[in-house]
Image 1 (tube, rainbow, N blue to C red):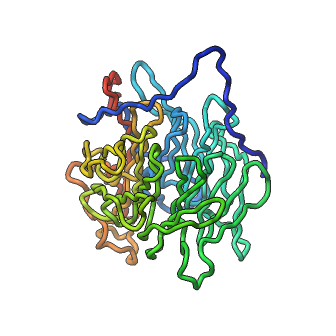
Image 2: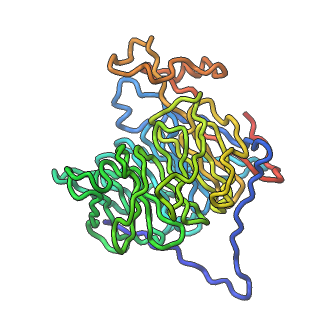
Image 3: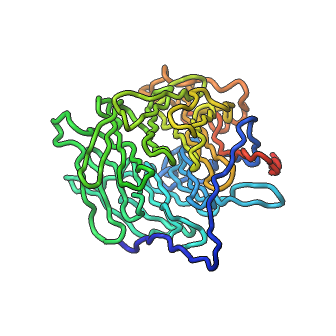
Length: 430
């Protein structure tokens, strides 16, 4: 390990002034404004993609705001991580790409350091999981590799985790792999501690298969939830750092877990090929407390990860698909009907993210659609479960430009939405 990332140092403010954080207010009575939209850059390719005769069309897969809200981290189909700086020029809010980091293999996950701030260079970093590589701790300003955390299987091959999360104390990194969770102490160099999630490969107990999601409880107790892709009865488990696994929740194929920021007994879970996001009350985990519909693109189910988000004030839940926003500020008594729903993109929305300080939200969209009439499409590609035609409102020239090897991407865009009650942000020129 090269360098370690230390927690943010808090600067003392003299006098009686006590800084307070006020959660942003979102106006959900009308559709938000769109101050910025951009298409995924199809010209920049990672080295591995350049070796192909024809690189596939590019689109964003995920986007996450930094904890201080100054930048956004994105990962796209061209196996590239990008840092986008939030800026305002002449009253127009936009995103400017400041750092581009091509990777040698597909990016499985990326997580900001919880104390990351552009004003504190030593904390401005993130971890990235790249297939067949050690976990990378990357500087978000220069892209420099600060440290690497290696996970090795029984055949001495590097294993990349499918999910990652920092603990609330910002001193440990949890990495979800196949049948185990690797825990790294960021303050000490060396290998991590391996926590098996199942007694043995033949056992039916515990979490089996790929650990697809890890989320820590918001009460700083150290309790965390982990889930698996496997469709087993016990696909979500709760872990206590003192006693290990402490309980099971339920269903399979989970793609994302998220605790409510202000009500730690509420857990949200999304599964692949599921039209709903399930809400669990950990005080009674035997049954689902509520189900929230997420409108996927054209009502179709997908194996693609469609990530949702809850704002830090705990008032709004944002679901991908069609952009649906629910009021979750009243615990489990919230309305299961969205307070605002609108079509934000012409394709599947792979990720949504609330800004931690301003009344902004970030969305990215795009997915692979296969054209059976293309001679370049391999015969082994399944054609019955995908959309073979473009949307009626899409630009045919754009589809023709993005079509490659029988793959079409309808809407490979990243958009910034303004939910401010007194919006003064003008629309950027198209």
